[in-house]
Amino acid sequence: MDTPAPNSDNEMEELVLKESIVSATGMDPGRLQIGIRGDPSMRETSMSRQRYASAIDGVLDQLLPNLQELLLGRSTLRVYVGFNSGEVRTTSIFDPLREEVHEGVKVADHTYLERHFPPVDFDTKAQAMRDLYAYLRGSRLYDLLPSYWRNIITKRGERWQPMDPAQIPEIIASLKVLRGMEDYYLRNVTICIVQDVVRMQFNCDGTQIVCADVYKQFIEDNVP
Figure 1 (cartoon, rainbow, N blue to C red):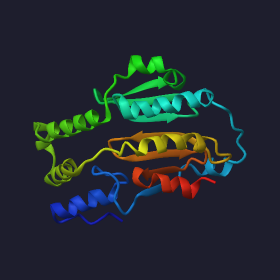
Figure 2: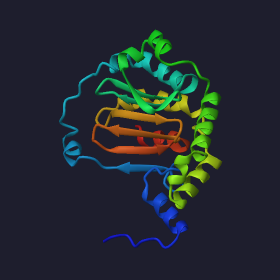
Figure 3: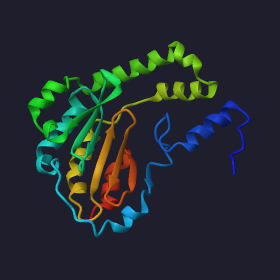
Figure 4: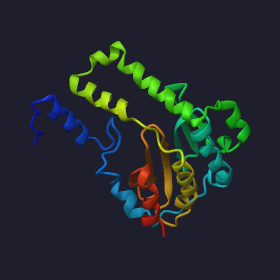
């Protein structure tokens, strides 16, 4: 059955934010952790599939501190790590509309990090994001938005804050534990300092989207 059409901008705004898993304003305070089930066949066969070590598994101890440095002290806004595929994808404050793809074993080499990711301290990145959002709100492109979407984006801009940098070391440290789990181990993870969320997919094809504010509790509740 189709959802009844909203009668006002306020109703439309509320519906848009309610329907999104992670909306333009981030995660709903009432939904700080969201689980999405994937392919049922993946869940049913997860225990019987043989596990293989990937190229990233072999350099994980070198890779993890470099990932932390990317988010805290370099130009990176978003990091995706494909533990099974061996790739690391990044988005830079200097080119936020494009995703870069790197071999994980190369990102584990600090000299590679120095060549590809310019140093930018966290506070400077955060201010650059505010400047970018302010520019978009003042551009002609903004005038193309319906009024309810302008309301959503204006509110986001007024209260937007990046991920708390103190949470990043805790998140990074947990990845080795999650990857080392026996059955439902971590397949990939996305950490985004713009949206303040961590997205994880596991061997059972389930997806967990967790607000950074409750990430530590998520780990305590779910890791043996």
